[in-house]
Length: 451
Image 1 (cartoon, rainbow, N blue to C red):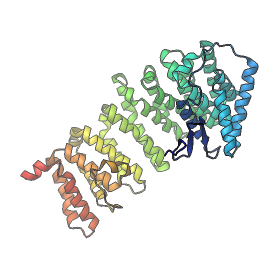
Image 2: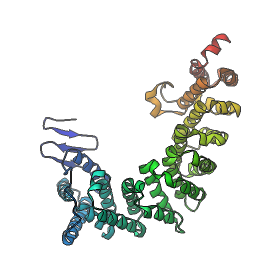
Image 3: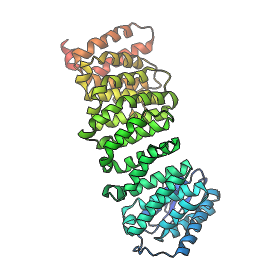
Image 4: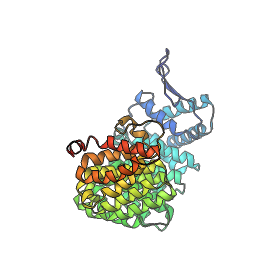
């Protein structure tokens, strides 16, 4: 909303004054410091921070850099600790002034490598990432400074024992890799990641795989020259049960690589699918949120490279049905599994029929349609997709089956369920039966009319 003074406000209580050219962030500092990064992005868009940097000479005054690094650390600590609005505004202005100096990248790097406070190191890494993510800033740096930054950041990544800092450094490394890795200018990065992932130290392996997943998300196809070696490495990390995070981050990395795989990597990727299913089953029992996130790899495969799933279609469908029908799992995970089956029916209908999977799919979906559902729902209403229930998700999946499977294969199987539902004493079962008829009416209309 906008008031008469030109103040624009959003739900996070961020205020921007067109007249005064600064932001006020009314949030508790430590737990919401990430909001400060959002503030920086918005400020840059409105030119509150200088939008360009002067030509880089590569010649900096060492004493100036030391003083700037000390100032940055002091400001970050103040923003972390100061709960007053006035103190935060003053800190933002000081950061704003320092960011106008091109040498701020060196000083931020010094904070990362020298500060004893892990929170300072973390947020310095996040600020530097925001700075270097823009190619115009990176190009302004001399080759010597670029090389020095890359070396210092990799050394910090290896030496820092704080997970929050190493995760922030992984984001920073991915930002630099976006500019450098595709041109072959940073071979040390892949060497370091390989060493981390093969390390005997569990934490090193976890952080190495997390870093790789972030880099894969940022670079995508630019990592393609390394795909074969990475897929071979993932065969080992998927079976590494010393930590649940090791196979989890492996699947995250694979998910970010899916849309860039080609025929030369197809067989290697196919060989990983059974282990991926095993890991997601394990995660579903321990951490449903991570399991739901990992299921996204099948969404990506269906969209980009469904051929990878062809040899494992039955196993994947049976696994998703196992999740969908079990009351021990939450609705979000079960709905995700239902939707994956619906995607597979749409794209691999011949294989679904050939492997006689329509019967077990209906055996799971129809009972779910007969469950009580809070409020009315419309299985065809796209606006309700984000708020699916188990009955509505199952109804939408049945609609997909009616549209893509031959009526001669689907209707006889469905009739077995309808006969029992219509004579059931439970009104929800009868309602589910009528809903099923309404769902299949479009896809099977011709068959129903003539039969």
